[in-house]
Image (cartoon, rainbow, N blue to C red):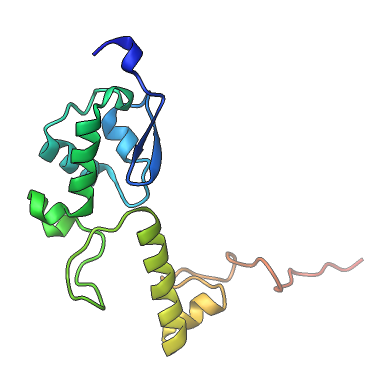
Length: 149
């Protein structure tokens, strides 16, 4: 490829990625794609991870998008997916970008609705994972210690 075919921004799955970054790191800029998934996608599509993303051909972009849409059919193991045993469908899925954000919001809303412990903690804007709250998470209505004058 020549230098003139370089694209400063490439669009993969409704996301603009920097063309100057190596492909492995450019894919990690997408929400829901981490280091392991980016490497798996590159391995399946047989692309060079060190190649700058701006030099990708349109066919390569389509290959990457097809792998991201349904990674299971391309041989990526289900333990790498970010949504195992979906509540509604029962399938293992890998969600990216807006699908991931909307699904997480829906899960939190559902937890609030059924009034489970995590849902109540989300409503109160407190941590859900067992952190101590004596010194942390004190923003908002909580008062500090008042000093004598």
